[in-house]
Length: 467
Image 1: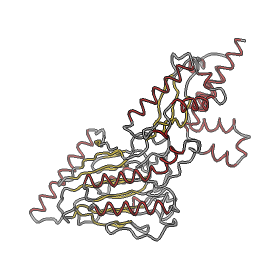
Image 2: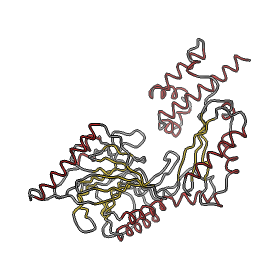
Image 3: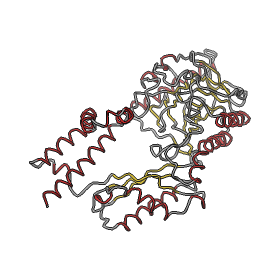
Image 4: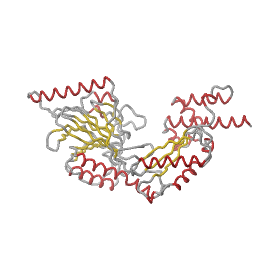
């Protein structure tokens, strides 16, 4: 269930120099402490950085899945929370920081609140302080039960950045923890500008739910720049909001741990938290621990060289079984992504064909009701290409070449792809819900649609010429 993994970060020469200078400053400060020149000295300590628990996520869109799959998913965010509690006990950390979106909705479910209260109590009984901020999914304005959090839990307010002190198990000052919660779901102010370091601790951790450098895959809440975070003197920015784990910088560390449990096929692979150890001189060591209860995977299957449907089915089943084996006993929800170029391409685009394939695969696999380590094919995404190479055909004279040149040009640029699709879907855009859905699509999705339209157009026109 748990996998220790070093935080991976490719350091440039300048970054290695920054780390060296950072550690020299820490050592200089400690030496001055022993001479009585300053009142801050570092002590070794450890903490866990988690974020985006999204407790009681509804997991929409899986109503056709067996009850065993749906039930496991409904419990998965709570199971991941239990795994987090277990990690706190095994690592014997001094404290835990949770960077927002503990709940999936502003009006938290009672079940989620009671489960969280129990988990926080378990963490504090193991000797760990817990520091929490709320994010856009669980702002302070949401409805809540009248629960009292355990002693040792500090939830930061919304009016200003607050500073609290974290201690080691032996009572020594480990760090100052700074944080601010969201008051409403959509916070567009740059909250990072409000963080100011206070004296009195050897290490400074900022707890913030934010979008750093405008990641387009996430809502641009509490937007800020990496340079702004790096320049204010904090040692570690414990971030939340982005569901992929990322180390944006080291010394000072700027870190997203990702969410605790994947919630869709867009959130594949291991999910969890970082266990962080800090030395007396401020050197940081991060180890990622996979805490997810259910894994989401995207499995690539190449159609090159496949002539018959049985071959494709057997290959997909082989890849599904391999993914199940590699999951280490955990259940898996999988999307199969069909890729490559071959004879099967046109047949895969027949109406209703992906549903036929899904039904066949599900019937061939061991049913989820009979095993804990099941794998369930959630969907099939067809990304194959026809026998016509679009780039070569685009160099031809005539209508097809002109059509493909326009399509390729539009697919490359976000604005051009949007204009082309707006024109093609003009009648559909009169419906408000459809227009809103189209507006929310990413450039990657629009590019895919254009390429698929070009593939289909090229095949139809070549067939017409051949006839």
